[in-house]
Length: 474
Image (cartoon, rainbow, N blue to C red; front, side, top):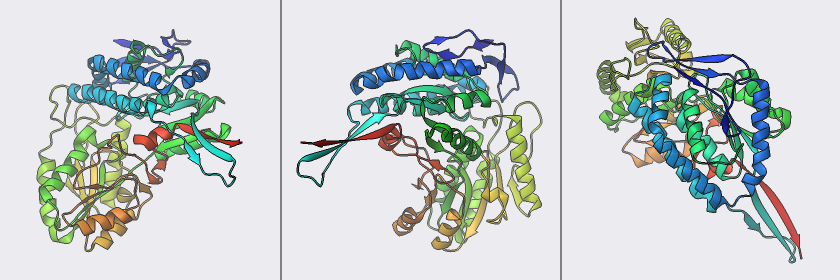
């Protein structure tokens, strides 16, 4: 059985105490690895190492940092089988999906490497005829990167690649549910020959993570996680007025118009709720269907959801895998039960299967009201609600009647309706006739309680920079 050590200052360090995390396979309940839990002193050492390395790393030409990122991408591809194996065991993903996640992470690494020669400042006209205003972009310093459990390999590179190309160094805290793949990535960091201290990866409890996030040398904290986790990061950021970039909860609405391709809509909805057991921040949670096509779409959804099989994806990759933990399953099922008690109808699913593993079937609820908890609170699992609407204006109002604003979807063949929704939806993303997939050239940024700042593309990369204005009198 693997026992992973923390990665500090370019080496896997001997643990300072015997405290470990037992990592379980959520499909089998079996312990698959142990991970040393970092102490507060180790967290301080890692952050100090990152701070010591940052000045030299930040002064390297962007093209040189880009070469290091390309080497890291090559190493990720070479180590994809090992990274994928660790990820599959700790997450319940199929080996092919887990391995492909590592390869996709290498692509976002290459994408950000290409910004090395494109991080631009500005020349701003002055009111004085003998003065130039030069706005420069500079690294912030040390970035604390807090990684979620659902796509831990991809999200880790999604955070560190833009941080590194802009001249920052990083201290990474992977999820304690899925830390093993992060330490396999650390081996790729060694392969890529980064300077000492540039990348540090540690398994941490909450108190130790606070040590990193409140360290005076940390200039930005970037998190993908829950709203409550985001609030905690904002508390941490107040200590040293660190910048925060937060991608938080979502409650994606899908509007299905009367003229929609219902087969395509049904396939998209089912795929969204069964991929990684619905544990996706942009996964469908609310479906608003025009009354004229409600019966047809409901029939299609019931047929497709009923055909989904659940089980260990190591044995059959076509199955829908498990939730991350028994606690997650208990909480989701309790939400479904409360919805039923409040008048909702279970059309498919809604039960806890017998046997090992944290499995929960794809579940569809009807007869829901907009004010119900199941419609208003994030589920983060394979459960969604179907409601009806009469007009496009009503659908928009229902979709916007929410605390979250991460992603949204409309299925329609009417470009007027599509543009009306596009110009008025209160969300950082709108997908037309397809499900969310976060293209890394775009900008993944939430409105309302879905976050601050964002990831991906030019704007996600610029989150890791700060500006300096140079006023030159001549």
